[in-house]
Amino acid sequence: MADYGYPGLFLAAFLAATVLPFASEGLLGLMVYTGYDPNWCIVVATIGNWLGSLTTYWLGWLGKWEWLEKYFGVKRAKVERTRWYMDQYGVFSALLSWVPVIGDVIAVALGYFRVTFWKVNILFLIGKFARYVVLVYIILGAMKA
Image 1 (cartoon, helix red, strand yellow):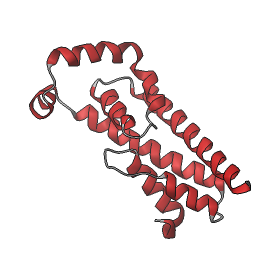
Image 2 (cartoon, one colour; image 1 turned 90 degrees about the horizontal axis):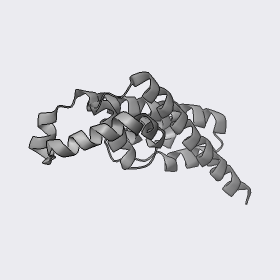
Image 3 (tube, one colour; image 1 turned 90 degrees about the vertical axis):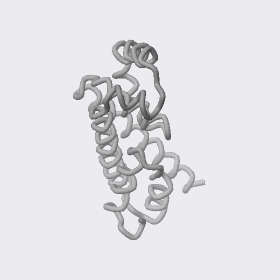
Image 4 (cartoon, helix red, strand yellow; image 1 turned 120 degrees about the vertical axis):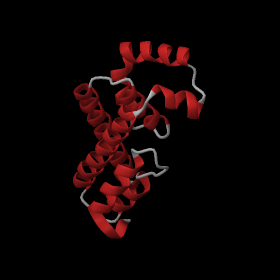
């Protein structure tokens, strides 16, 4: 993927934010280490990861109660308890959508419970941006050591 430069980073970051098991951190580190502009790496990775989370949110939006029960054995009472939590605090969980594994679950749940799109959208973007800024800062610090 590093051979593909910024488009490769975009794709890696996008896939990392979907339900596919993929990580973009290694490629980001390699690109910064090999001389790609750290600021552009942050921008490209953030946009790719953000759009990936929006795609995952949309997949959740398409979800139906019947599917949860049929394919995952989730009881309606549990969904209703989760709905209460999502109604109260769910939008802020979008800030944690960058966390590996649970971030995908958060994005799907936010879509499934139809948490306000524009709020989720903004918080996804803030969380993703903060993640990549911190990662690049750590990488640059390690390169100086």
